[in-house]
Amino acid sequence: MDTQLSAAQVWTWLNDVPDPEIPVISVVDLGIVRGVQVTGDSACTVTITPTYSGCPAMQVIADAVTSALKERGVQQVELLTQLSPAWTTDWMSESGKAKLKGYGIAPPAQQVIDISALRAGGLAAGVKRHAIAAPKVACPHCGSGHTELTSQFGSTPCKALYKCLDCREPFDYFKCH
Amino acid sequence: MDAKVNYLLRQGDNALILSQRLSELCGKGPALEEDMALTNVALDLLGQTRMWYTYAGELEGQGRDEDRIAYHRDAHDFKNCLLVEQNNGNYADTMVRQFFFDTWHYFLIGALTKCSDQRIAEIAEKSLKEVTYHLRRSGDLVVRMGDGTEISHAKTQAAVNELWPYTGEFFNYDDVDRAMVDAGIAPAADELRAQWLAHVSDILAEATLTMPSPDAWMQKGGKQGRHTEHLGYLLAEMQFLQRAYPGAQW
Image 1: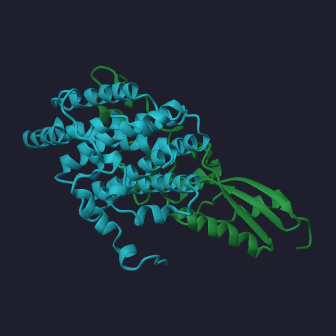
Image 2: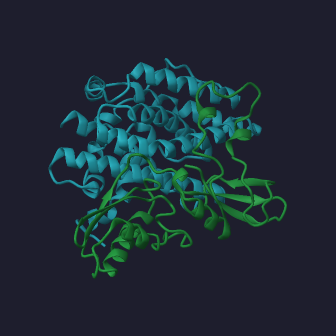
Image 3: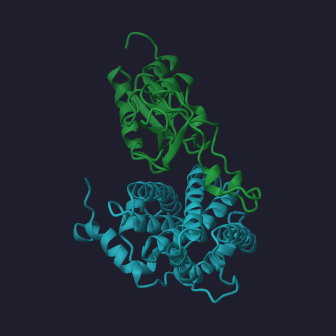
């Protein structure tokens, strides 16, 4: 390498590492990369955090991060996995959300999961559980807010299935987490 | 065995055995959406299992990793509650089992996020949002099935009655649990039980189902390794490969 390795340079490179399931966004956009530390002339430590504890893509992501940096000449790459603070969709970048939408996946619609209705006695009188369970999500195709939850889980743990009642298209929704 | 290692294995065993039960329904769910949901819940629980087992193996210090703990132990070494090893039965049985478990899991994991052991608190923090989503879903389904047709109501009530005696074990603390309470890790049994009963009673009422007596006779033994016959069959399938080809990797 010609110049001294910098953390900013590593972040830029990681910005080009795509998520294996949703290749339009990078692992940085998703908020999976939590920290970069340069530990030597050509050595760095990258801290990543899992999205869901059972997400099968995590190993692929770890391998992709390591090989992306090695390909750019970094000789030593150490990966640390950090559980806390737990990953949240609040960490997804605004550009990441825009890219998701352009790809046909509705981005997270609210901040973090609302659990108030779950707690014993937390349900107001006369309110039915299923009426509050699903957040309102805008259709990524036509923008209509007239949509309906089809399934609480989709093709991966991070998504749910919706359909648009106006343009009639089904779509994936990246759940709040 | 060290009490904390034992406690960690209990958490991992509960998550793994229920995950394996749910995985049996992969490709056989009653509807595509349910099939995906069951396997996604199974996946979350499997991820949690790995975190519990890895920590247990590290603390134990005998070189056992997550795979060795999962695949190289026999039924009497498993410390899961009897509820999670019960067969899937019909869909009401599957979802009532899930709802009883999720409610306990939600309040337990919530308490563990504030416990004195930092690593346990981190695993709990990581799991809490997943567990919350599971509980929201299973509670919703119990309401739909209970407050559904005459047949779905009858089947759900039968599942509640059948599985009820397996719910006491969550709160039946032994020396291991008590040591964890003293260490500032596990929540007190009566507190956890009161939260569990309050939420279960809310949901069953909304589902127009009758809650059996909290003082009914309860099964026990799973945490100490005394299991129902169902666990052996489950392990026989789950551990087949490592038993036929010990140490196989790919």
